[in-house]
Length: 396
Image (cartoon, rainbow, N blue to C red; front, side):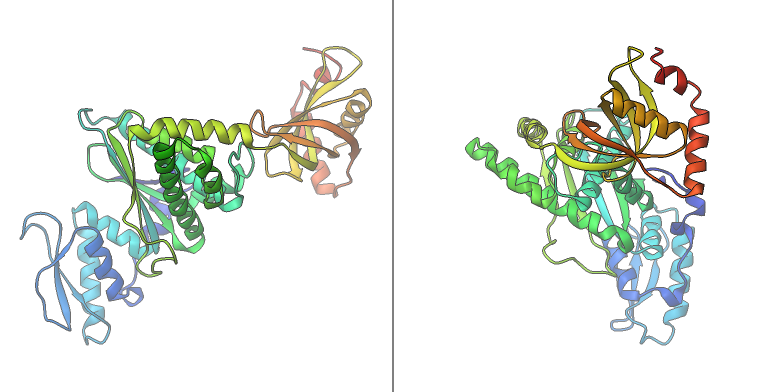
């Protein structure tokens, strides 16, 4: 089994996940719960003192573990130490999953994709990984704001939230995947995704029963968005169906209102998901904003008149860059500000068309004073962009 973060900020060997827990830090009840979750079976032991756990598979296959039922058992630390050592040496794939759950208390988001009739391949596994990442990103976006369509908004903080997520494929058929979302910092993502998936399922059922799409409007508050519908389409397309479930970290318990065995989606749901995604895209309004940004590119077709400017957004909107068309005077002000290493402030409407990457009706362009360190950095950025002067003067 391989484990790697979606963004791979660290090599897995360097990450927190690979620090084995100390026996004194392990709750025996949590270890037993994780063993049960990952298919281990209790087969005897001294009742009230410890249990004997065997790995998944035929009885007698693999090394069994003796796990105390509580720390009241006199030799609990010794037994826990031996159990952890055995798990670390075990060739059973689930042993790795148990150790991960102990090292970093995590909620486990699991995907099953029925690809009956399709041979296992790297492409099949990557399709599942890509869909799962889309889904996690949609959940992360929903923790930032409720919107039918997020576009480029909130992408940076949402993507950063995924940096702590570890993913590991189970089985060799490419149809199963598990993501470990740390409770510390990541539980809001798991909760929001859980709620959004159930809301999407209910909205699809309503649409298929009545033909109405109204339930998708209410589902936005639960975290459903165009991004989530696209992730579900990517997951289900080309399969016989798919299922997503969240197994909550035993150490943290089940969040309020988040019980459930999982949500299933089938190819028959695809038309409703496509219609919902298009509906969200049409309905999301433009947003009035006041943006501060550094000019990174300028272009106009004539030596005079209006021109197009690309800004790196510093404040006012949770997007990385935005394009704006300025009249001649505002274009000149933006050019001068860039040459002296100053950002500009302006107002307008962030258009949903194009993914909230364009500002329309821009006005009131003014340079903004910044500290010397930021100004030097902006000047250096300008010097590295050697084609700036040519573009600012109207060159192609």
